[in-house]
Length: 268
Image (tube, rainbow, N blue to C red; front, side):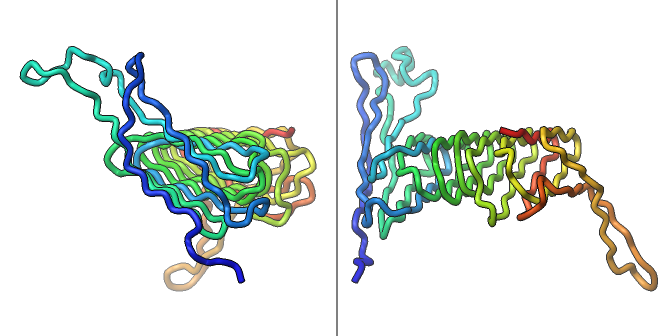
């Protein structure tokens, strides 16, 4: 019977000292999986900080903690009552692994950035807020990326993606896609720029309220209309800015939605 207890639990509260150059040091933690060689899930929740996830050929999940220092953190002239200030680089975070699911959460109080290596066949659920840049490379799985104040960038990913941010761009390049999975890309301030394999078949639903739509594909978009019940008798027809059209022979829906930005569909 498979062990359902926590196989790896690390609760870290670190004081990371400066080196001879006055810079903070990264800390690396290797997280073994309960079932090495099998697909897993990485879940990241950060209130302040960015995350970079890279697929590699190993079997462990490797988490590198990158403490953040602002421009004034190494300024020895900043003093209080004549005392020399020592930069407070303490970092709080939690890593937990159960049955090939790795959960990483950071502190709400101080920005900390993370770089994570995962086996290439791995699914991701990433959520950031302040200073929440998300970058993903060489990962094959179901990917959910939810940012707020920064860009979402993915390179050489495969499978399916749902990406949502507010103040940032979305730039994604696929090596292959899950032909049965719907996908969605949405932002408010920024472009949506996605590169797909040339053989993709999908149904595109596109909305760019204050931008343009560009495509390498032979895509015939038509305005979507919607009939809804009117008050009293009659019919009410709404046009709410969406356009629809098939890529290739059509297939699962892929949604693209931005307000201040363009939608760019590229063919690889």
